[in-house]
Length: 510
Image (cartoon, one colour):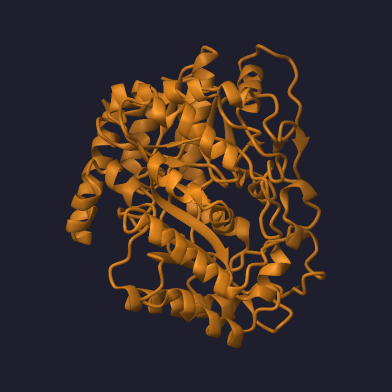
């Protein structure tokens, strides 16, 4: 039994909204959000069960029913879904773009048949429970027309999830909410998480999380980003340097706890921009990494221009334990990058990539993100710069090439939308009836999708075996060294992953 049950996990979804099953994508990794809410609620005296690998359970109804019967009881107050990673391609089976919310509904299984199945079984155990949606995409889900969720927790939920639970438990009489058009309610009064003492927080993984021995975990070192890129919007964008960084002793305590109890030495950092200041990197090395009796490794998001503006931080990060990174390069078209707040010329970007490769050698996996369809991008221009960064001699290991995601929502709070979504005309974008954009150079989202698919294939042909910055994280999650991971063929990794998820599900049902 549990007062709160939260479903989470990373989905792998095709164009029809169907699960792709097992695979060394992101599905084996543990997402942090639901587990953090669970840990905070446990500290308040509630019993909480997180149910991970959601897609592997909901597609096997007999497993879902057994889990519901075990954990949902008359004492259960709410059942939640952490929707941050519940998504796939917006392209449907006809090659057209689904509305964003419709696509998200597919990813969680909220078709008409799915809603009936989920609600009937949950309500059969407790007809009074509330259905709750949280996570990074919850504000978009609150725009949906049909009714499934009773509450949406938007923004950082560390404090508001406690407020909701206290209210449903009858400990408080009032809950500050906003009414949605479909009859649900949103809890959005702490969008930036200011009611939670993040700096002094220590996350504790629980025995019911069923981590096992030898794995990798996500961790929050800091929150927010000092930048305000036009295409990006999160609640703590534009923070000041050295804000929202956790106390060094709390980080050490968490690392030591995970090492002693679960044998964890590898982490995926959730920092938006880990190297947003030199002071932060030096602070962490001097007060955390150098104090440990063992060596950790980690993968994280970095900003390339800042790294190369302070060359000593390149080696400092390697000494700290960096083994994988993702750079948001976005474009090698300087006229496009200027629009979003990045202005480095093509040659400088390529020189910087060679600079970090020269220091890191092959000890750090380098991935980059490339956006197709920014303002001032034409197909001819894109086809000119893409090969420069994707060819076999490029210093990168892999690239995530994707069309611009531009999803303006009429009448939504400005807080949740980025500058491009709030000012589409200013940035030169028009939209058809399906919400598909065309930029100021005549490139459509369909064009960008086609180009992205073509050059993703080109990259594989050029590079051969692709190394992904998540590989160290996946390898550790499968209890493999990175060298071992690369010796296995894809079907073999599938079997290892399947066995590990099956053990987790069996542990849940013990």
